[in-house]
Length: 84
Image (cartoon, rainbow, N blue to C red; front, side, top):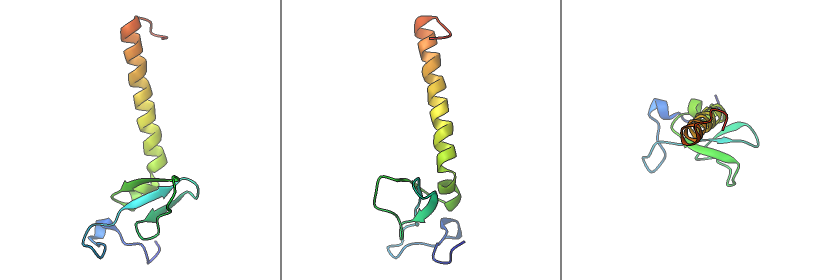
């Protein structure tokens, strides 16, 4: 791990005393911190840990699949059609 990155897990904090947040840059596929975060729409977060940020795409994919399944079930309940 880059020495300039401080982990929220080890209790390190920013100068203002708050815990550092982590971000996932979908353009570069890199985890960023508050200190080096890109200022564009290509970041997901904030996340509490570097590991959570690194898993951002997988987490988003799983949530989207769950929401899609929930919507499918709601359409099935409303229409009575399992293929709706």
